[in-house]
Image 1: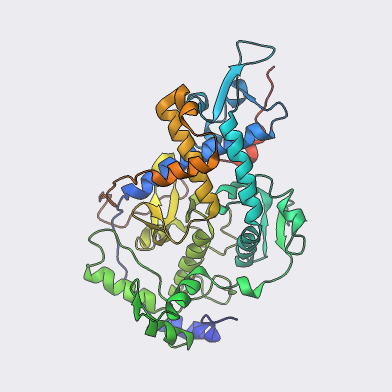
Image 2: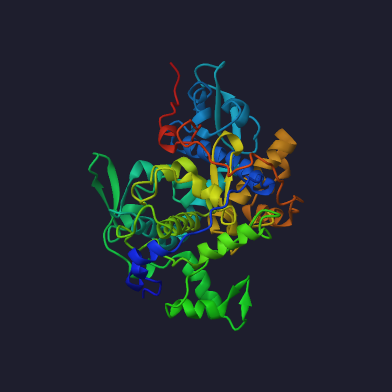
Length: 439
């Protein structure tokens, strides 16, 4: 049931003419805790991609020669050979069967066990994956997305490496592969699922609305009940960098922004004036929903750029990340640009029951760290059963980090140049082309 404000689209034309939001320019503030998470997960993702490439290999290993040009594809800041040798608990090194001077890299028994467990997690999460993909397609104008774009988002959305071959074939009642207008193979939604057309912001407020407590996490239940009756706007959770929330101009600006009607990202937005403040809040809602669909509540800016037209985002959408620092964090860590949904983290940890795949990847990272610290002895230290690894992960102490470190960039709002940057993106499609043989 649609319970968000369609409300004659809240009388779009008249509303857009009479309201003016106070414009406030903010300084960029670095969040060390979130930057650390991005740093750690960059290495974790690269190791998992290498693991998948070895699994895909017909020989069961990769040669050093085939990895020479993979650094940028993996998003690494160090050469791939140096990286893969850091983790002997995951990757075993041995000479080539024909050319002994050519190093080769395969998977250790622990890495193979982790991969088998990962396949089990994907199988157990089939319904969740179907819903996640369906909701992403439902947000787009044409209800379809190029497969090459989805391959870039596999890590963020929690999709299996071969989702386009196995997952989609099992769910032909939900998806079909078609040829897009640009000639690219696209994933298309077969039918609209009304039960999926509820945003995460609406779900979270509905949970609070049914609570017997008058105020939970700063959300007033009375306001939510008014929203349900069409008398109030749904508000975004705000978590400002230290010092911003108390500023009168910022507070007035956010109050005016929150009063704007909330337009569901699953609503048709073509009737809204693209230059209006209502469209601005709609764009914030779309970005909020997309990041909520990712299992780590974050993604690379360039991955969003590939969806810009389908999601009906403005050309320079990066300004929304820096303009609303209470909702988003814009990171420049690891020579790339990453946007994070701030409400998804608390004290450097994901909140609200992390996805089962996230839990599994924590085990993978534990095995990585053991190899980094103990080198060749790491496999002897690790238990031989994944259940014991899980217990070790639970016993690890949480790192003590301060949440934020303020860095003044300029006297005005930090506006990132969206046309000047060339990122070292991780592209899983190209990783499939890594050769496993030598000349």
